[in-house]
Amino acid sequence: MDRRMWPAIGGMLVAIAITTTMDATGYTMFSALPLFPLAALFWLLQRFSRRDVGLVWGELHHYGWALAYPILVLGCIAGIALLAGAIDTKGANWRMAFINMGMMSTVGTVAVLLTEEGFFRGWLWASLERAGRSKLQVLIWSTLAFTAWHISAISLDTGFDVPLDEIPIYLVNATLIGGVFGILRMMSGSVLVPSLCHAVWNAIDYPLFGFGEQAGALGVEATHIYGPEVGVLGVAVNLVFVAYIWRKYATKVD
Image: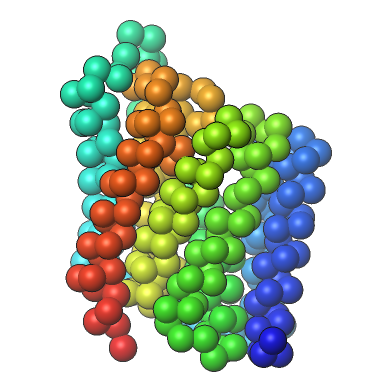
């Protein structure tokens, strides 16, 4: 293997090992936090510039796409679930749902910037580019690393875990969702853009659809069908968006 890939692969394995250990020992709520010091340490060791790791402003229309993705995809899934009679809002606490949505879309943007996005679309992205990988290879490697990092959270007893038969669907969705974040990074050259997208996705998805086996405000119980992250409908709608944005924008990036 190309020696230039060793820092990226080594850093990725360290991050996965730490997170898996924390997920296995009851510290899932904090398992993303080590990504911040790891990314900062690796950034310093490899002497990247702010631009290398994407700490620059993207163009305004990039932020438009960052908002459009979660709104369109999650809105589409919610609409189909409503038409199919899969929504039951009788027990919904809408006040708490909206509070969570507001907090997760604002504070959450900074949180994911400092953790998941800062690591995968920030440091790892820069490390892969320095290793001489093509833009497509950087996108694929960083997306697969992002997916692998999530395995322990949904497969171990963490509170976020899902039934065994939903794990493969989740991993496909995580890959597609991570792929969108990566395409946004590639389009804009900024890690801030996917950070906004990631935070807004979480802010709409979890309060409305829930996580693991816990239902959200929409009361959707057939998550294996309608779950944006664990359902087959999520795979279909996410795939359509990935294909569209890749065809329209990513292939135009020099």
